[in-house]
Length: 146
Length: 119
Image 1 (cartoon, each protein chain N blue to C red):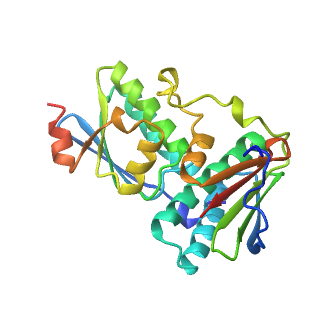
Image 2 (spheres, rainbow over the protein chains, first blue to last red; image 1 turned 45 degrees about the horizontal axis):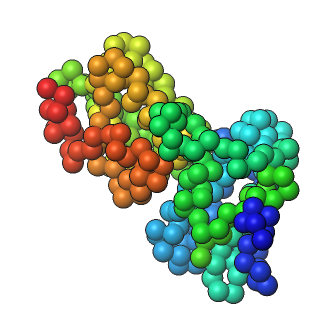
């Protein structure tokens, strides 16, 4: 199955830890990221893993606000944190936008893109997380950390 | 809505013709990146192209912050200057490395050595 069309590890009974909604406003991102970080800290997730998840969530929410919602604060972004019985976590970020094709994004490591001021968010998410899946034409991202 | 956790303290001072910018807090999309962008634009606008960024107390740099740093690095270099980093923590170093820009920057252990490197 293509990693872009599968929602992640199969046959997992997922527990919902958080189900948050925020206005599509860049100033609302930090509070959601920090809430997820604090929840992971209470679950005794190690600092390195918490940092990687927090930065991935930051990037996913920023993409949802800017590209999914066009910075329109009347629109809502949903962010869920779930875990499976093996302690693996998944963060699901959903926006109401038309989605996008992640395979068409430019490679930020190409020489002509090194000094670009944008275009690194999805690349960074893929580097930080263990599995990344885009659903519903790209307006939902599922990010797994083992 | 700005959460307390989203505030980036920015302190600017000048030493030996070098702008030393001390940051404290996460450098991420929103007020933090907007605030640093304004400081950097003002510096370039007044001809300041030698900049030291102290990152010792920066807990996170997101792709928006990275974009800001590399954009102004290019701008200062085009004018014969540079942006040099001081004490980025292990997470900042990891992030800059992951996106392939760590080697664009000179990194120093303290402000004094970074300032002197412009001489």
